[in-house]
Image (cartoon, rainbow, N blue to C red; front, side):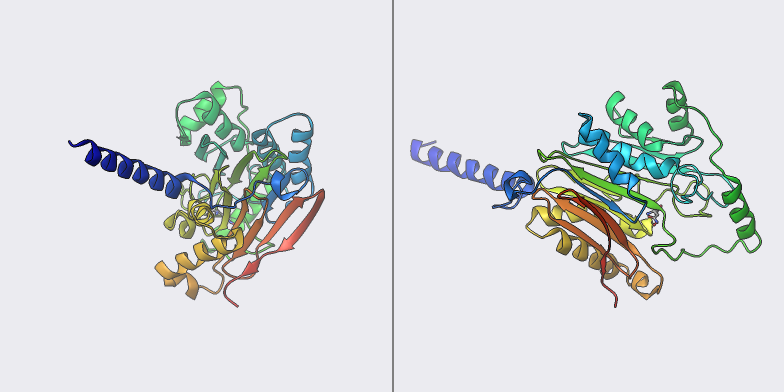
Length: 332
Ligand code: SD4
């Protein structure tokens, strides 16, 4: 090859590599980090209103010198342990066979993640998911294998079906009708939580007992990395709630993060992902009770939250203040 041709070819190849790298892995230009925006302290963002104790537990973990992974784990452990929360962990409503089966995942901003699906008898599935992330070379453990792994690692086998949940299940058995449930602020299933510390490190966790009275073995979006949760500290994170099947179909949380990577605000990213769901599957838009929603946080500390129909709430701790907000929604 002549020297000039070689230089031209080499520099073109270099440019191509740069373009690919930029397009695939760089945040939008001018994308300020949390610290650069002058925002102070950690941000904790979660789906619904599970009480102030959720952000407080996450913050306590950070104050004690813990990591953002500690913070998200501690935050979601609060509703997991609360028997009054009928949709996460202990006290969760069972499947149609009367068994409580749990789904959870955890992810940090560097691409490390772990997940458990269809796990029974363990009160804190998020902690088992964390162990999968940190102690194994795998990402997902399911069912009996996940239970075996948990027991081998010191978790206790417990009965998660409370008398209240059992009563509700027996009541449901009288008709045994399964319709996609109406999801709103009084009836919801999942906590998805995103955290960013003062240095801009990010992590997320998502945990649920899934849809009440589901077919045995059903797994929703919540423990699926990219559907129920996705975090990339170059860009931001997103997590979802609502009808998990709809979210899985568009790889919802990954989609929100990729939209932010390509320059969308967290709010626009949540909206576009929801529009994608009903564009591809218009049947969801026809359901008057259909709710799917996302919350998102970008690297600059900007927050987004949106659901398809009215009803989503979210809890935000930012600049030292914790508040519960009603999310915007699409179908008016
Ligand atoms: C699921 N996304 O299992 C969960 C349920 C949920 O509010 O979030 N409901 O499909």
